[in-house]
Image (tube, rainbow, N blue to C red; front, side):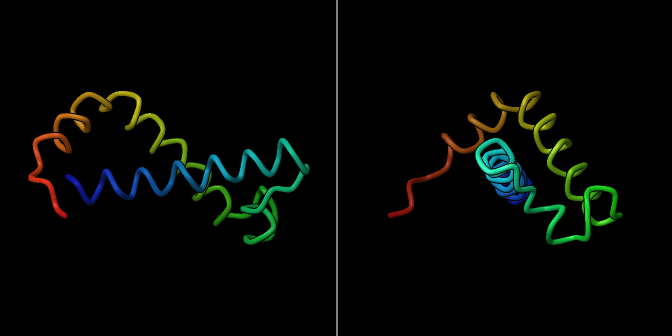
Length: 74
């Protein structure tokens, strides 16, 4: 499950950076990389970011518990 948590976190960072670029510069990096907003790969990335947000929203407490019970790695 921790691997899924990390993938979700990465997707949320990607989504957040993309929205930041859209808001500040009207530049959609995902659309630029994958040939437009309607391209299949762009839609997949957008969908994965959306699903990651839903997962994070519903599972935040379980994720928090999973990570807090881990032994500290120094």
